Length: 379
Image 1 (tube, helix red, strand yellow):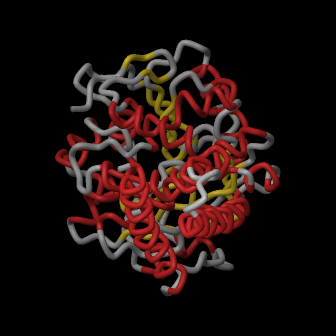
Image 2 (tube, rainbow, N blue to C red):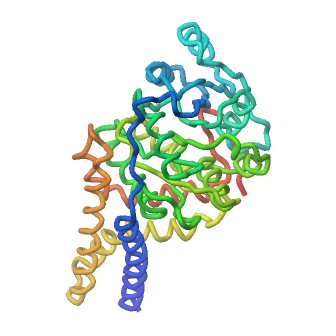
Image 3 (cartoon, rainbow, N blue to C red):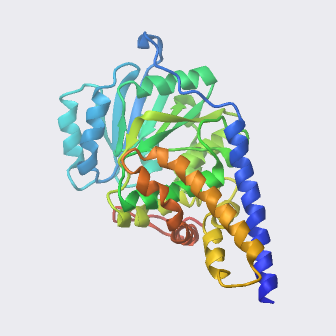
């Protein structure tokens, strides 16, 4: 009975791995979306409003605003939306307003109790003060290069994308880089590689840390009704618009950096809340993707340990070793995203099993906390 169970688990793992690695190979061979250079005359680009929803971000918002102040055209407005901070964040924004007239503070307050996503609430409130044709949604831990907004907009215009996300560089280091890279790899295994225009809903790759969209596409109240009940508002927004026929793309951006999470405990506690892609409102639901990612990431090493001493397990050991080698190869590719922690990021496969368990835990949880705020349930 045990041998039949082991054979079945190996066949399931091989099938999932074939599907996942096959999708990654197709993405790698498909035409890549090129990160366009900024035009010599940036005045030819339409204006962009940068929107930053915040909650208790006094420690991180300063560098973000300093970087944005270095961005000229097409950045016409910088809107910081506070959703109920009590750490002095609004005062920091007011001080920055005196140095740059483009900065504006919107005090939205805490979201209504039926909103399960405070960031989505902040984005929705910000749109009332946006008058530009394009909106660049970002976070307080993001550092945009001086020409990054112009390059993102030029890329969107050249590719005719109504929504464009950027895959940034991560400035985390040490053991945090290993954990972070394992979590990031789970997203790639479920969705695919950045640098393409999505053909199917399940391939929509969205990143709320740097997501550009046409303002007119964000005016639908139905869109925000869906985002309000989502743990991953960026994916919900992008998938909903893709379903409506909007071209949604992603691109690797080397001039955008994110100092995402301060410690291993911070990442472990907070990122799975959105990374699990628990949506419940758009399709596909997260379960198939999580199952495939678990099979590819967590099972090979686990099965190898389980059959290590079995004399009749040569074929299974060979298959497990092959899949582990593939996983480490993908890990080396992901490590490029961590310029300050490539060595640690390459060790990410060793964190795959706990990451898989944590993502399942987050996906099954109905309530989460963010910055001390208890969020509404997602059913």
